[in-house]
Each structure stands twice: as C-alpha cells, then as structure tokens.
Image (cartoon, rainbow, N blue to C red; front, side):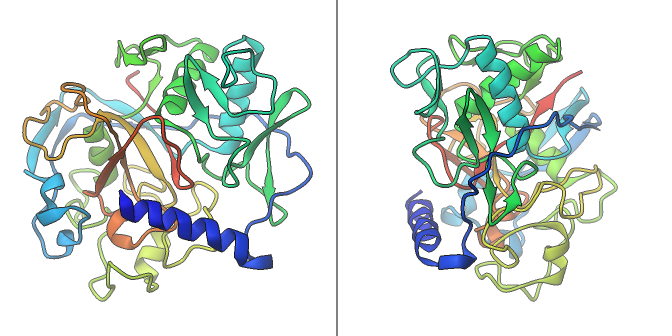
Length: 346
C-alpha cells in the first residue's frame, strides 16, 4: 500500500499547487435530489476467477501475481443484482439526511451529529467530510448537500472518502428507507443475511463475475471485459482510444472523477467496473485465493485486517483497472479514489 500512499500525496499536492486547472470547491450548496438506484440482474452461472496467466494479465500489483491466484471456478446457483452505476454523491447525501432525521448519525465524541465534524456511527467514521478536500458531500444549515468543483455539479459523480463502514451503513439505511429487510447488524458490523432482499456490498466473487460479463462475452478473460489494446503500456498513462471508450483512468481523466455512466457499459449493462473509482467489497482480504469459497459467497472467515476493494480508479495506471486486479485496506480508512456500488439478492 505504500505506492498508494505516495500516490495520494501526489494528488494532494497537485490539487494544492496546480492552480486554476485543479478542482475548486464551490461556494453555493447544490441541493440533493432523489436519484433512483438502478440495479441490473446478473444471472446464475459459472466462471473462472483470478489471473488468466496471460502476459498482459501479468501486469499485477503483487509478487508473481500470487494475490490473483490460484485461478479457480466459482459457480453461482442464484441470480443477484448489481448497481448499474457506482453510488453517487447525491445518493449518499440523501441517505445521510434520512439517517440524521432518525438520529442515526454521531460525531466523533459520540454525540448527535450537528455538523462541524466527520460523520460517525457506532464508533466508526463513515465519511471523511470536514477534514478532507476530496469529499464533495458537505453539511450546512441542518442538511447534507453536494458541493461543486470548477462550477460543475458533483451530484452524479461517485461518492469518495467513504469507509467500508460508511458503505455498509448506507446499504442498511437505504434498505430500511425502501422497506427492505437489512442485510447487516450495525451493532457488530456483520453480514447476517446476505439474501434478505436488502442492499449490501457485493462479494469479491460477485464483483468479478459481474465485471467480466456474460459467458457469451468473447473478451471475458481478457485483461478488461471489453478486450485490450496490446499497443498500450499498462504501466503508463498513455492514451488508448479503446480503453477511453469504457473507463476513466490516468490516460484520459480531466483531473477528477467523471459522472457515473459516462463511459460504455459491459455486456451486462454495468458502467465503470473498470476505473473511475475503486469499489469496496464485502470480503476480508486474503493474500491468495487458496481456500476461497467456490459458491460466490463472501470470504468472511478467517478475518484479517483489511477489506477488499476492486476496479481501479481515475488516477491509476490501466493495470490496476484489470478485471482480476485486487487490493485491500483497513475498513475504517477512506481515500480520494474509493467508493462503492450496491448488490442485492431479490
């Protein structure tokens, strides 16, 4: 993770020093609007999870690509749904306002939330709000709202600086708000009923299965679900017209995220599975796939210090946006490039 820490410092300095071309916070609050959660059904089936062993899939972030091995078959005997898009700033702010109205939000001292601090619940920070220049959700006048950057509304951009706990809390509160049975116990932060019909984070296997696309996708086991550009150095920020149609990465970003759905979807209809932001998954991080579940469920035991996130981001080399690429970090951590998308079993 040291490379990611250095990358974070680089982006921080660039925002401070680059002048007028860098994102600037707006002064006028942008009211949140009800934005529907669009879900896509992913059918039951099987796939091969992990690194394909190809030369191009060898551009991984761990020694000998061991963290993406062994490649193994995963079979889903159930269909599930994945968010068509990553969760946006507007959606997150709306659910925070709903949760605040029910007394769910706390400050870092454990008192009722009333601004002037980051957002907590049950001892964990959900969103690094006031102490961070990358978060575009803010609070004023008794409500959460979405900021602007360079006079551009950020409501449709993916929410960032949200911890794993912040993603899980959102899932439960949106489920409650929509009249669905929640999947989590927020007292223990545990997944108690993944198939309750409520919203949850995808398992890592669900995420990769959905990312790679259907069994009829000829590019299913290419580095990206849409194929590859063999002429592109995956360890560079060189531009590629092929990649540029489907993802936001360091080769085509404008210095920030793009609105969700700006790029073409995979053959399941899911947008931004490659790039734009990293996405939290349910699983605890394990160094290899040895012993991983073969039924699509989240790998919850044994526990570790990290939770998994997938997909790559707007500021990454293309190699980090491959279908097989995976990382993990402390669930209480937040990043300028880390958010989430929803899953559910209806």
